[in-house]
Length: 111
Length: 113
Image (tube, rainbow over the protein chains, first blue to last red):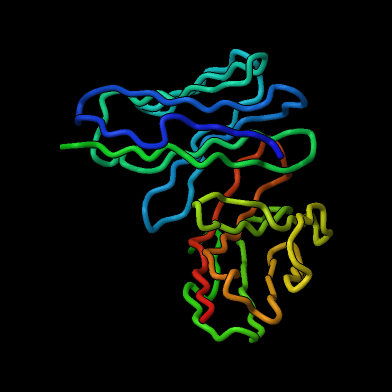
């Protein structure tokens, strides 16, 4: 069983503040790391797919970094807005052809 | 047009019944998946098809049988439903695997009474 951990499990952030959270995963046999944003009552939507050690990706106020050697990725949100409230899932992809999803970080932005 | 659509969105049925959930994608993708969101909110892979061929078959009861009539469709049939089958089932698709993002359907909530 592959151990994918996301921390914290939940987070409350004041509107306008910046925040970040972590995804940890086994570093062996790594292939790619996916981040998804999952709003309540909707379906998960892809944010980033990262493959190379040291990768940094950015989409608007959201960015992510990847360290494949030590097995972690950070997701950053700058200047949080109420619409950022969602659960953020990471999913590493290993050589066995399947994504393994973490339990997510539930982010609530306080207006 | 919804890219990945699942029907039905809600399904309430009695134990022992047989039911199907359908999934269609209009993205031209070659890989489709079924995920189950369990009671702890984990998304767990059940099956994956690439060009109508089964490539991932996780340890699920053989009461669950996927069927892919063509690349755009992946249906999930469940025989002899049990209480523990109650969950939200998500269909997804991607172009290839691994470093390609998944596009999810809106989920089908199955409740077994």
